[in-house]
Image 1 (cartoon, helix red, strand yellow):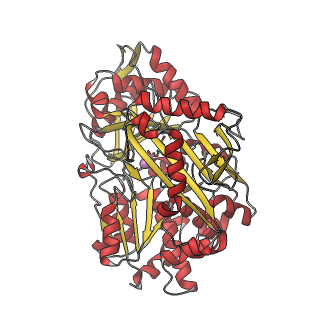
Image 2: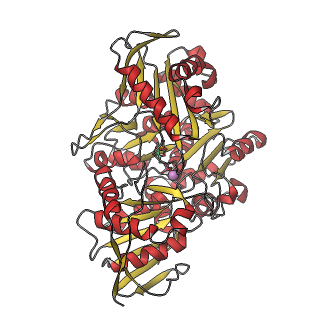
Image 3: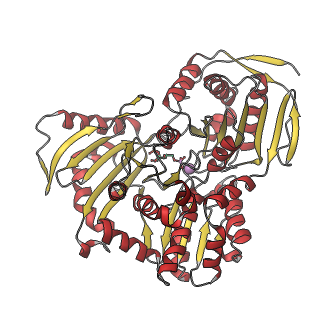
Length: 554
Ligand code: VG1
Ligand code: CO
């Protein structure tokens, strides 16, 4: 088979966001050359090139995944890629891709996912590149990709029949080798090295601590089944929505209190001890207990606090450092201080943690957006977080039988105080209005008299825009969100989302710290109301967006 050069023209807006390029599916599917252009620009931007390289390819199995993989196979062959490792049926969770890249020491990977965004012909699709240590491409690479998409005039393919990705085994496409691999096996074996499966199995088999895992019809269905049913020996009722669907069964595969209500209801109605959910591509997690919602900012803090006690991976290797994204609450900061650990605050998006991990400075990190993970791979990892929590619950119950998720939460607050945290999302508002709101905030912050003013009972310490200098490679990331810090440590943050596919999404984050034990059991929304009201007033959000209510409250 010979290489064909296909003439093409640039498309507007092929700019990767917080986590890859996300657009309506039809844009990828129906615009001729659109997908190939982006893949060509991506391959051109891999540090060191892809000639003779191996790459991992897979995704969350959403609608258009397999046709996209066929296009990727042709462009990869046209660019001299030597070997592709493809998940069976195109299915690999985002953490599993990161793991396979590291396991097989490939040049990187291409992930087909729009994560927690809905899937289907009228919903979203996405493509993302990960590099050789398994981490999402950083801004130097994503900027290079974008620049290439603006001037692209041709791409290279090898023509040929579609490759059957439904059967595990080795095959060839022209000179390129293709290995179709089991989606679950390697990843699950790796989790088995990190955690003590026998210990968790023994704990769950006692039957007092009941669990339900909800894959929301996303990619983690087969992984969840392999873990809960096949490994821990639990009944079918320990999992739900575990058959992956190209449209996520028409749902929104986002594990939060709004979109994962089915598991929240199940835990409450059936009186289960523990519930968990993961997103479309398996990198997010939500943890709940009976009557207890574990805020993701608390979750990473609690995992970090227990790590060396409850998780073999950290018992062996220790914890080198902790990190969180900027909008994530300061609960983790307090654990870092108490354990005397290096601590980092990075911009939103997992790509900012990779360098710190590669440099041996970071072991456990998290984002408020239901992302938790460690340096076992270079992506956030939904099932890892779920098993981390099961390890903690097993250990806590060993120490004191009958310990609930709520008990673990309250014990943490008693020790560290509580960082109340909430996020309001205003999805798909009109872009111009959203930008005007952000600009107006920047203007307010620029006034030197803004510091010292009072918003209700809160006194402003400063208002500024977050920027970050990577301590490892010195790269600078600007414009990462507008933040007001108050003299009591409370914060209000406004950011524009970088993962939407249409319009703009405004995220408002609020945080308040309390050391008053009488408040620890309170509903976060009640305690944060005064701060939220001030944020809405200051930003004139309703005036700029026409929205009187957020789409999602976390
Ligand atoms: C959101 C979250 C961010 C997360 C990103 C990707 O980004 O806020 O914390 O890393 O999604 O998650 P944004 O720019 O929309 O706020 V996922 O599960 O899509 O890979
Ligand atoms: Co995701």
